Length: 215
Image 1 (cartoon, rainbow, N blue to C red):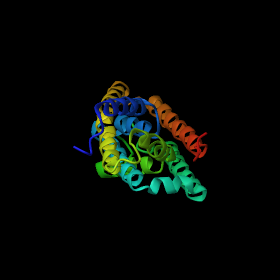
Image 2: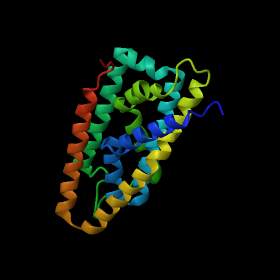
Image 3: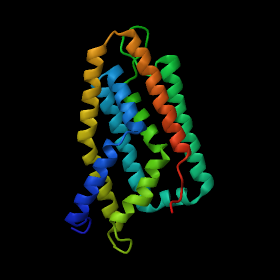
Image 4: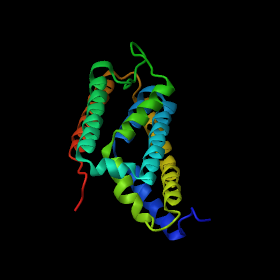
């Protein structure tokens, strides 16, 4: 089938996707925070939202739009600013309102699964480092002169999602175990809120330093 890369490419990309999937980032931080404070399925919903974002990134890479975004400095700068602002907003929510980071049930509104899903979509789409991955790294696994290049890019994009599912489930399960161990411990709740706020702030700074061009 023309849309299938060769076996060596599939295996090599699977390894690269796995490494990226287990590397800490804003998506993982949000999955853990929602799982700890709202349960397993909220963490999964965030992960599903992030994977939906991967579908969008793959589509944009396949049709070349992501390349235009990275090649246009104003557009890429706008993406970085919006993405960093979104993470800083999550950090503010974590400190002031708990931002969905709660271990105790009292006094906090639980988001719907749909809201957790949409937050996962947003944090993925607004991460310029993900854009860079799908513009600079993903195409290296496809011959640009291959008539089926676009189809193979889509295949690899969905392979990325499949490879990401086991780490997602393990991460969310581990976060749920943490929540069960420390539930109703107020100082742990505060520590988690400030900790996740710090994590989101650090990732916002990292996003702002993302470069559109690499040597």
